[in-house]
Image (cartoon, rainbow over all chains, first blue to last red; front, side, top):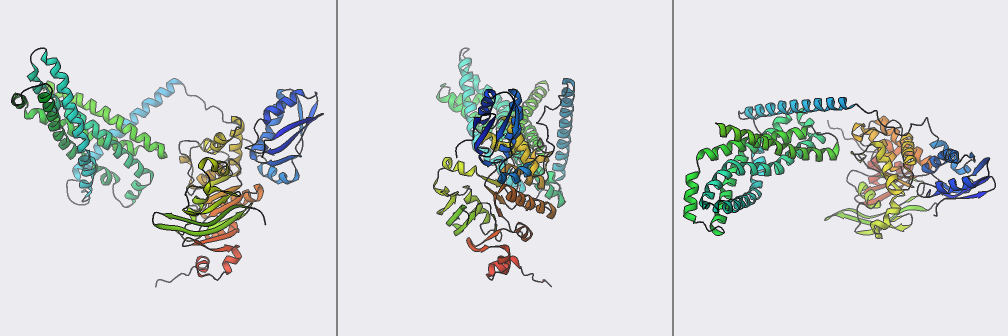
Amino acid sequence: MSAARATAGPGRISICGPLSVAHLGTLAAQLSELLRQAEPGPVAIDLEQITALDTAGLLFLETLPELAAAVDRQLVIGPVPERFQRFQQFVARRPRRPPAGAAPRSSRLELLGGWVLEVYHRTADLLLLASDLSWSALRALGRGPSGIRPGALVEQASALGSAALPIVAVILFLIGAVSVLQAAAQLRKFGADIFVAELLAIGITRELGPLMTAIIVAGRSGSAIAAEVATMKYSEELDALQTMSLDPLRFVAVPKLWAMVLCVPMLTIMADFVGILGGLVVGVTIMGLAPEAFVEQLVDALFLRDVASGLIKSLSFAWAVTIVGVHQGLSFSGGATGVGRATTSAVVMSIAAIIVLDSFWGLLFYLG
Amino acid sequence: MREPVIRVESLYVAYGERPVLRGVDACVEAGEIVAIIGNSGCGKSTLLKTIVGLVQPQAGRVELFGQDSSALTPAERAPLLRRCGVMFQYGALLNSLTVGANVALPLEMHTDLSPRLRVEVAQAHLEMVGLAHAYDLFPAELSGGMRKRAALARAMALDPEILFCDEPGAGLDPVTAAEIDELLLTVNANLGTAVVVVTHELLSIGRLDGRIVMLENGTCVFSGSVAEAQAADQPAVRRFFHPAVRSTS
């Protein structure tokens, strides 16, 4: 079908062809041009020759008087052909809703106030959830109905913990290697390049090991937790648990919290080991340090205190990542985009929380 | 006889090893109401999805408006699909857009209407389905019945020649389900749209009173009016229309 077109006669304009959504094309421009050329006085619009009419076509006809007013003409719009009249009556409008207007704007003060309230409520929610979940987790240690479902812990530990082993190992190996490469080049200027072993031992166990492990876990598992909880909320699984008088928090979140709190420190021990190994390999092969001296220096520098402080850190990181993930998952709203939003903010907030906690611990251990 | 807008010939569709449709023949004429019925899992929804090109058949052909749609590339099929509207079982509204924007989306992507006319056409369709006030709401704010209505408005946005509805009454209360059927009848009577409904609800089948195409085990076992179906002798059709209730004493 070709597009609808308009032809002009004296005092009248005929519209021919299909007056339907796909064929309106340039009809408005044609009509406007024809109207401008027409003699002053009323112009009749003849609709006898239209071959099709749909909703868009009818509404287009309703816009014609406005089009004519713009070029200072008056219109007399003819009736639509007999066979379209039933359709016209069906679409004939009830009182029309005005085209979407701008919503009234709030003042800046109101926006600021709304934002502060929002932050307040979200923080309160988060703290409440943190205490609730931690308490549930402790109670789950006991036997009986508040305990963890058998198998759930192993399942979660395997998904959140052991599945992360390869990626944590690769990244920490590289981090250890690069640290030694960078530090040894600087220390060599002072002839002190063997002290790179001490730097490596302390840097990895106290700082980089726990921190990098936690960041990887936040990216892997924090997002997974948020997405899973959000999807469970969306598909009413959480409601279903509640109707079976199971606390969704305990059922879903507690096994995750325990799995994370147990697995992340273990991952960190492995990370410390692999990180130091990476440094050792580079120190010996590229920087040409004597392996015996390197290891001796390492062992001298390393105290249990360093490793333990790293583990305490990683424990708190695991706790924070889980709480943030569950919180974001629970505060999800609105369909597929909501799940995406919850996941993203879970990762961003977890990483922020990890860095803040890390600074806190750093300060505490340094002062203490 | 009016010209068929859909013709399906010995259609064969399998998911992996499991055949779902094994040689289905059916056709739909312009302006007709057709109810595709059958028990759960008999291939009704698959047939619908195959007709609109969401599922590729392994054998057989689907003709839309006289063209062999299964042989066309997606780009070639697009103009045919624009003449069809599909209302999904759970509405399938895009949650990130308002109801109005959902309805206006096909208009925005497929036509060169002015933005103002687009809003008006979308609003007109929302009014037709009784959702005049819902333009700026988000799908998450709607009830199940309203979501179905909004989905119907979106399916109608381009004034299609064929309207497909997958289980229009599923999950709705009887009153709302009847209203949706009423709407489909109004659309069919006033706009001349062919309506293809997939359903297994006897009440809805009776209300729509269209031609019945019954599927059983992936083949078409019956085609005819509701009255004919109720009087039919085939065991599958009898079981469907007169299900025996076994007492469990």
